[in-house]
Length: 273
Ligand SMILES: Nc1ncnc2c1ncn2[C@@H]1O[C@H](COP(=O)(O)OP(=O)(O)OP(=O)(O)O)[C@@H](O)[C@H]1O
Image 1 (cartoon, rainbow, N blue to C red):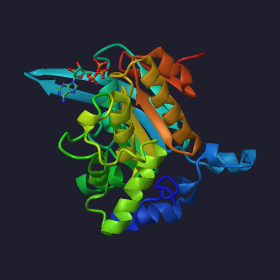
Image 2 (image 1 turned 90 degrees about the horizontal axis):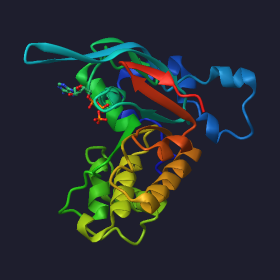
Image 3 (image 1 turned 45 degrees about the vertical axis):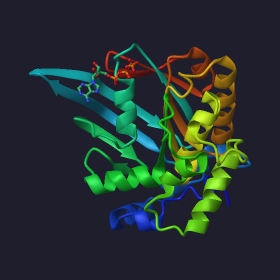
């Protein structure tokens, strides 16, 4: 079974309230729309819940006596299986929004639900478990540990999950195979190209079977051909049902997404094609 096939929250990582939430709202665990075959009926479609719901999300930072508010009221729903990009001016709050979506920080006000759970109101432990069970992250600078091999870098994401060493080894091998690096597990980042390093980072992000991949400029450090390779990889993962939200300055990336969003003046707008 691939890690993406196992994209259900690990019951050992979920709280009672999360389990109740799942029982009360089974559609929150629905198979992503893009992975359903044949096409769901309109009635079935209406039962698929958004993976993210944001209502009036604001975020302020207090710095040296000044208050800065990069997000002034973000409203959006993202459905399971979507591939969305967020563009916008430098300093416009894109990374801030991605941090909120990734449960790395909380909104100052508003509602931000991931899979039915309001992250704005959740305790720290719930945010930690949501991050571990539901979310994978990819960054522009790959953020691999230089002294570790590709296998070891991917393995880091499975620490603390109560898996046996052999299960972890199997999962790591599956994830590296999925990103096309089955034969590079023993290589350190310095022995890999930029595109290959980003593939390792993507393997690390998907190895635990998240529902959502959040990417901050995933192709920002890559040349055009490597960018296209990474985009094809992300598109393939998305076709298998992974929801992807990527911040990007690159219109070529945004053009490949189902949904283009623009963050401007602290609010998120749909970009018409
Ligand atoms: N932890 C923080 N503390 C204080 N201010 C912050 C913090 N994080 C971000 N900011 C400020 O919030 C604003 C939005 O920053 P953010 O990094 O979200 O923008 P961005 O759209 O991702 O920018 P870029 O495209 O340049 O990466 C900036 O003015 C930034 O200085």
